[in-house]
Length: 216
Image (cartoon, rainbow, N blue to C red; front, side, top):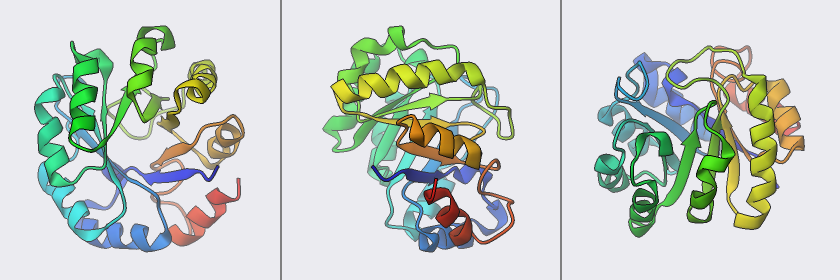
C-alpha cells in the first residue's frame, strides 16, 4: 500500500503560509494535517480558523483536522462545513466519543481518533469499528520538536493487527524522522505526519524530500 505523507502545517512558514501550501501541493503531499489546540486539552494553542480557511482555499488535496481540544463535538460541524475531509478527535477529551464519531460520518467526512502516548489500545477497542483512521501520538501532543517515544511501538503493532479486522488506516504523529518512516512503513503503518524531523527546515526542496521518503 502506498504511504500517505501528511505535512504538519503547524510547522510551516506562517509568514508565507499560502506559498508553502502551494509548494507542498505541487510536491505531491497526500493530506494536509491541521492541528487545532485550545490551551486546555494540551498546554498550547495551535492553528486558527483563518489558517485552516487559507490552506483550504489554496489546495484541493484532502485536509485533516486534529482537534486537540476539550469537547470536540462542539467544533465538528464548523470544520466539516469549512471543508475538512478527515476529522480526528481525542477520546480522552470526549465523554461521548462514539456519538461524536457518528456525527463526523453523518457530515460525510472520514472519522478518526488520535490517542495520546499514555492511552492504551484496550480503552479504545469499542471505537475501532466506527473509525476510518487511528492516529497514534508518538510524542505528548501540543509542541513540535519533541523526542519520539519508543514505548509507543508496541501500541502501533497492536493497532496494525486490529486494522486488518476493522479496516482503518494506522497513522503516526510526532518526531517522525526518515528512519521512522522506513521502520514503521515496514511494520504496516500507512500514514505519516511530517514536521521538523523529516520535512520542514531540511535541505532540499519539498519535492526532493518527499520523493526520498516514498522510497522507504
